[in-house]
Amino acid sequence: MDRIAALLGLDREAVEPGGSAVLLPYLDGERTPNLPFASGLLTGLRHETTPGQLLQAAYDGPRTRCSQPSTTSCGGAARSRRRTPRCC
Image 1 (cartoon, helix red, strand yellow):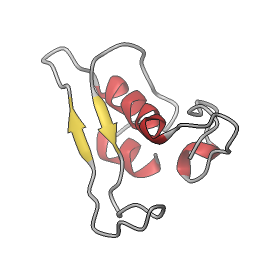
Image 2 (cartoon, one colour):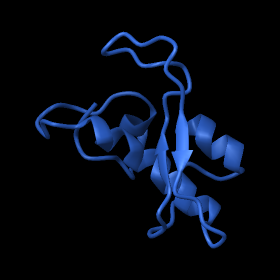
Image 3 (tube, rainbow, N blue to C red):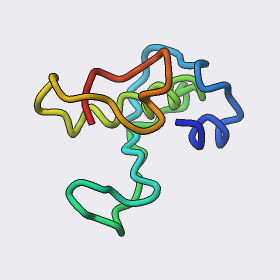
Image 4 (cartoon, one colour):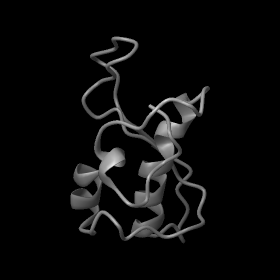
């Protein structure tokens, strides 16, 4: 999340609700399953999409992998007060 916030010039807590953006933050591949060449994806942008909504999309993106809410958060999202649901 720090990298996405830095790219947007925002503090990591400067999220905004709303918007239709989806960001899958696999900027350095994915560890499990082992997909070292996976890349990030940003979709759903509109003219009215704000940087804060893009940051929220970065927090929301890992949810797309969640199938069991009892697992724990990891990575940058785990250090934030604006955590994604408990998944990884």
